Length: 232
Image (cartoon, rainbow, N blue to C red; front, side, top):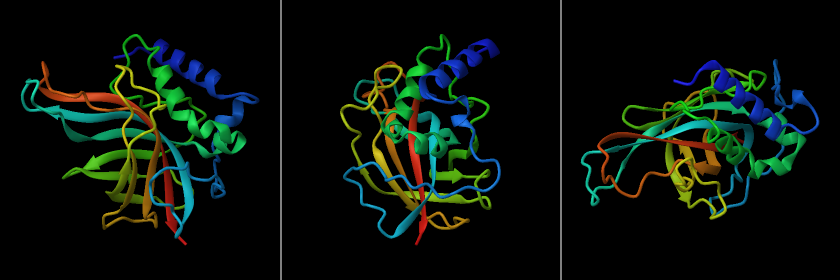
């Protein structure tokens, strides 16, 4: 496990790489918030024409995979993901050019840790945590925004569409590629009004191509932006 000094180094490096004019750009609103006004990054995913943007989150954590046997013919199976979600809107509103670079910068800083934890569960202390991303049984993508602006939205999602990450996306800590960009929609039983989320600007997280030499769980660090929408 990484000691406090290494995590502190990560905090400092991350701040330096992302804050230009003011150290307070990372401080999310403490009470209430204005809806983001940014435009979703262009891709082959369907546009959110019938929805209104509610939150933009930076997700940092790991994609999970598993291998039943350690052969070159076996392919790792998806076993979900775990990520902490942080309010990215204050920083991105100040400098919209960072939309395309924020997750990649987060993952690049991850590489500087000599012995990184399985998940980057902390980002600089002034950066508002929105909630958590994890998978509920049986592998249902779940977004628990327990620290949102109004209420405690929880989205139980399912994949509606996907497209490959751009070739220019930041590779992972082991030089693996970036996971796909996705559109996830309400799978039922969600609360709080959010009906869709886009995973975009991904960095790292792709599974190894085979299970050769590996059995059991595999965790692959990744970062991404999650754009949450509510119906109009």
